[in-house]
Image 1 (cartoon, rainbow, N blue to C red):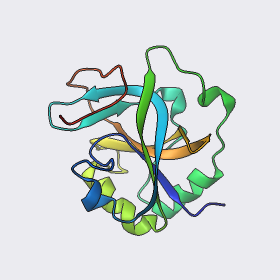
Image 2: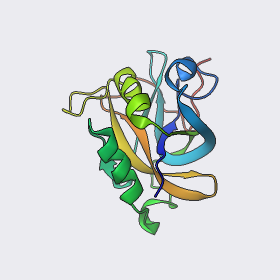
Image 3: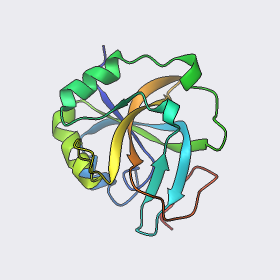
Image 4: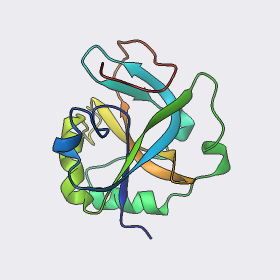
Length: 160
C-alpha cells in the first residue's frame, strides 16, 4: 500500500506557476497527468475544474490520514476511467506526490478554500487520473461555486 498522497493540479499549483514553490515544497515527485472534466478560466487569475459526477469517487475530509487510506483502498473501475463523457474534455495537469500529507495538504486546503463542512470555494475530491502508465485514484480540487468564466476546450489553463 502506497503511503504517498497524490494530488492532481491544473492551475496555480503546477510547477512554474504562482503557488507551486510556496505550497508544494513538500512534494517528492511530479508527473504529467490527464483526467476528464470541464476547465474554465475564472476572472480571478485561477482556473476552475468541474468533474463528471460519475468520476467523483469520494469527497475529502479534514482527516488527511483517513483520506490517504481512502485513496489507497479505492479501486478504479473500467467505467470511470477511460471513456470520455459527453460534454467533458481531457484536462491536462500534473500529479504531485507527498510523503507527509498531514504537513503538506492542510495549507493547500486553506489556499483552495476547502472546508469539510461544505462551505468551500473548492471541494477536494478523489477522481480517476492517468499518470505514469495507468489510471489511479488521485485527489483534485473541484470548483464548488457557479462558473464565471470561459470554458477551455483544450483542457489547459495558462495564466498568460
